[in-house]
Length: 296
Length: 183
Image 1 (cartoon, each protein chain N blue to C red):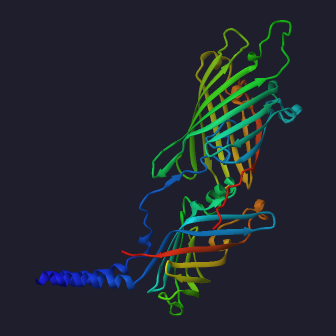
Image 2 (cartoon, one colour; image 1 turned 45 degrees about the horizontal axis):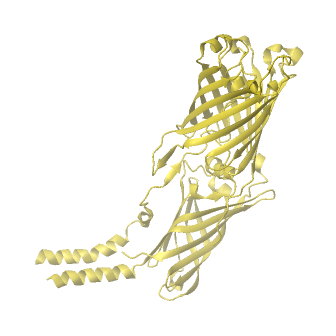
Image 3 (cartoon, chains in turn blue, red; image 1 turned 45 degrees about the vertical axis):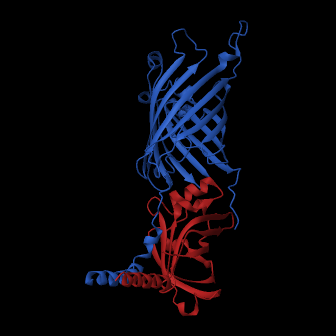
């Protein structure tokens, strides 16, 4: 009897005591929401190759890529700055996971079309996914005049393909790492011994130096024997500088080529030899599709 | 015997009702930056807010990542460069309504209030005091307010390159519909 009474009295008091609780507790989440990792890389390129980043949904990015000549050509060629190869390109974020690209490079007057699709996005919260995974595919068509016009030439001989998996993880707010297995197929190669299919394993990273500047590097190791014998592994190191709608990437690389088909399978420069190209990418983003703000 | 418990429980319930709390998890806050070169607006419709009508305690918890911008890139810059939402995920306001006696929570009507307290944003805490309006109805309480924040007060720096695009003073618009919490 007495205990019951005590319980009753305690119950009576319990309510006002509860009211003293921290009101913040009211905000406790019943259901965790998806917390996506953002800005694994700052640009859609790590340095010269693709990163897991896509242009934002509805944004069109105009990219100017520029690789100068070799530094070891000396003062006569103003350390390579007298010559340059360029690529002009557009990338468009169709939605949150798909981006399409078009571009044209000076080397062999090459046109390229590409898709980049996000398969996994690094996230915590509702689901825990430790990495981001994207697929990048590109078709390149060179448009040089045929070297031997008298023989039968096929249009398909102009075409080469690149397939890449981009596997990235943002380890901390300052450090991201990406693995880039690549397959390149050329319909036509110069010599019989050349590889039609070239495989490589690449890695790229970003180290944030300040809120707007980061140090980036990228390396592609050739796995295909013949190609590895004839060419060099592509290595690039650079910095990203971002200002508002622009990202400016300034770098040094041993690759003259700008698209994967060229810089992975056909890099002939050797860093140790001083065959280094200074280069830069400038990208400017335009938002074409505005996100609708529901009105109250 | 059982009666005692029932009465006690009943009393408890009654007490709970009089010590009213009002809550929302879908409040709306938007901010606007009106700089010469660019107008920026971002909306957050998942704002947590709670008001205790007995004590006048009024608190807000705003997840910074939930601010939606027109441009995807702006949203990334906002989170990555300005509010650094990976380090400081929430903005928290803990305040009080000092003129609580002017508000009759039992009677529908519109009441002018002052809210004062600590605003914690980007790891910096500032005392603020702003005017707002409470509209009491049988459905709950609608609280609205518009005020300005100096971004420099919260250690958010604007680089020279975008100086004309982001205003030094950001206008904050609060509109939350609080519902009585019945437990």
